Image (cartoon, rainbow, N blue to C red; front, top):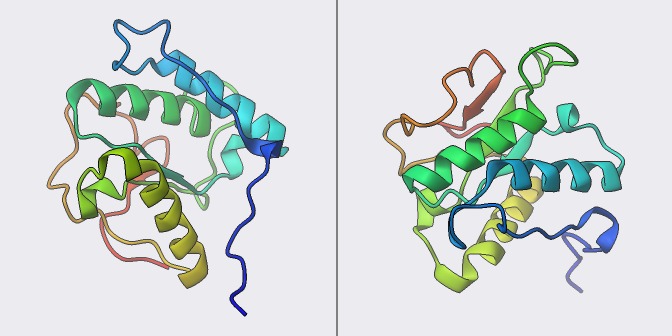
Length: 153
């Protein structure tokens, strides 16, 4: 009998919308950041304890920039206050860099990738990324955040 790899519940689920964005398909970093804060609070975990974030990673100038800012602001904040510890690097990834955009199946493809990472105890490299988008936050390394450039456990 196959075993379950995960269970889903509403304890750490949340939805948002981009009503504050420039237009409906344009992401909005403050709204995304608010969503991340709500999800981690509902789950009872500190954003500083999260070690991996699966990005939507569309490869667009606007999307990648907004997403990188919202993720780094919540999971690796700059400035005064708590910071990420050196031994707790935040790794970022997106299945799209390895598979391409799968349209309506993009969300479930990302979910399956994360399940496989947990099952195998490994993070795949971001093979389709030659360099970071120049609109990404310039201080990601200082915040102990980075893409997973090579296979790691």
